[in-house]
Amino acid sequence: MRAYLNDVVLLYLDEMIDWENYFHWRRGEQADADVDRAAMREVLETAAQICEEQEPKLRAGWEQCARLENGNVVYPPHIAETLDKLKQAGLISFGVEEQYGGFELPAFVANVILQMVARADAGLMTILGLQAGVAEDIQRYGSEEMKREYLPRFASGEVMGAMDLTEPQAGSDLGAIQTRATSENGKTFVDGNKIFITNGGCEIHLVLARDAETFDQSKGTTKGLSLYLVPRTQKDGKPNGVTVTRLEEKLGIHGSPTAAIQFEHAEGFLVGERGQGFTAMLSLMNNARLGVAAQGVGIAEAALDVAIRYARTRVQFGQPIAEQPLMKSRLARMTMELEGSRALLYRACALTDQNRAIEAVLARIASGSKEMSEAQAAELQTLYERNETRIRLLTPLAKYMGTEAADSISRDAIQIHGGLGFMAESEVAKLHNDAIITTIYEGTSEIQVSFALKEIGKGALGVVFEILEAELKSFEDPRLAELADKVLAGMKQILGAAGALLADFKYAMMSAQSLAEVVASVLAAGELLKQAKADPRRFDLAATWIDRRMVDLEGRCKRIKTGTVAHLDRCAAVIDLVD
Ligand SMILES: Cc1cc2nc3c(=O)[nH]c(=O)nc-3n(C[C@H](O)[C@H](O)[C@H](O)COP(=O)(O)OP(=O)(O)OC[C@H]3O[C@@H](n4cnc5c(N)ncnc54)[C@H](O)[C@@H]3O)c2cc1C
Image (cartoon, rainbow, N blue to C red):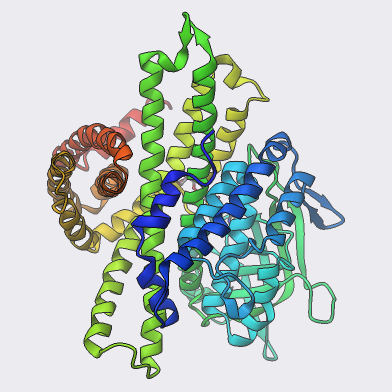
């Protein structure tokens, strides 16, 4: 079995992320990267140990759902027990700053923990991911008073959090939100109905609601939305008009409660600025998207692990099925898809971390610190802006790739098990059922590729490809340089195809998935080559990715260049055949 804390995580921890500058910029003092690395490793080892030990119980309890008892949500025992262990280890709200009682873990470490938890149980990961995300949003946008009141309670696990966006008529389109926030005598009250709310029985809800003053003018847009912290209990201990009206029965992630919530004159406290709720929520959603990408990687890792073990022991035609060429090729493709997605995720996390650290140093300089010259600060500002462009493109790509990989790898794992894979108790069937939701929540795959397209339309490829080109041209080892040349050729083809797209919005939208696939292919290729340079055992992985993906890229780019929007009329005609 591949370890929970595996080689590739350690490769990023030890070699592929610049921790020295990260801690230096974050703290404003010279950092000893070895000490920090050792501390992060210890945290990861603790998480890995808990997940590994709990995995059998979590898999065995997979079918047990959260229950609604007298209006309160009760976790099934396997979830409650593991949550408790994570709480005791302090691993419940990773990003909460030390001054509020948290560990302030870098996004890379936090997402590796989420990946491990998802590998053990994807439902538990959803609860934990929301908890961390809600706390981080309060930390980023809440007032000092709000942070002091709530963050220590998040860090200790005393309170849990939920993010309340979705309504029956407002799913992907949050501009359709109708939950109303009304001001009365200096207080604000929230009324409305939310659905599909993960961890909906918890104490703290971050609710996106439309302000009554601008309700009619802002209807149908994301303007006029504000973010409110709505506790279930008022300060005097009385209930606050937040009711869980039902829990959903689902295909997977059974341990994670998914609730319908009614807000009836519930007092809410503004988080951030009035009318800027969507922006504040986007920040939570971007973190959550990396979290769901990590969930995908975790599920894929679990499914691949089970599939490889089975294929090595199942004998047909006198040999293990893993030796059959078709099976071998399928298992290699699954591994490649997992590692390509992981590479995008880890780089997106590393860039997010770097920018948080730069934010800290620039804030100190703005308040008078002389720790660096003006020219150095200006350089950091430029790096920050370039990183932001990369993060805005990489985040939707990582979410799209990680979750689609989880879906396809867990489906392939069922195929590898033959008839056994289709049995209700099959481990891989459970993993596949869990994987499906990852391509839907926190923005569906279609929404992710549309976001990526939007960033490309704003010119993101200019920055991202300039950095990638420099990296690809830096390989001295001839075997790596030869592969890098293939990726450089792929980048040229993408630029040709993207030009053809951006002239016609509808055609661009139609091709958004293909464009996301090819851009993700070259970005992951660059990352896998860097991995191979750091660890030569990963050469074949990079070569396999590049050989397979560059052929696919060529076909997709050709199709994008030669197609037209008229194809949509043909789609309509084909669909009409069904009527
Ligand atoms: C288990 C679970 C947990 C959840 N947890 C939460 C939570 O904690 N908080 C919360 O607020 N919400 C939560 N959700 C809601 C989730 O975020 C939404 O289900 C998701 O955003 C999709 O919205 P929808 O279901 O209304 O689908 P729709 O938006 O109706 O989409 C249906 C289909 O149309 C496609 N589509 C829609 N618009 C476009 C477009 N512009 N271009 C191309 N295709 C498009 C979608 O990709 C999808 O395939 C959860 C949902 C589930 C199932």
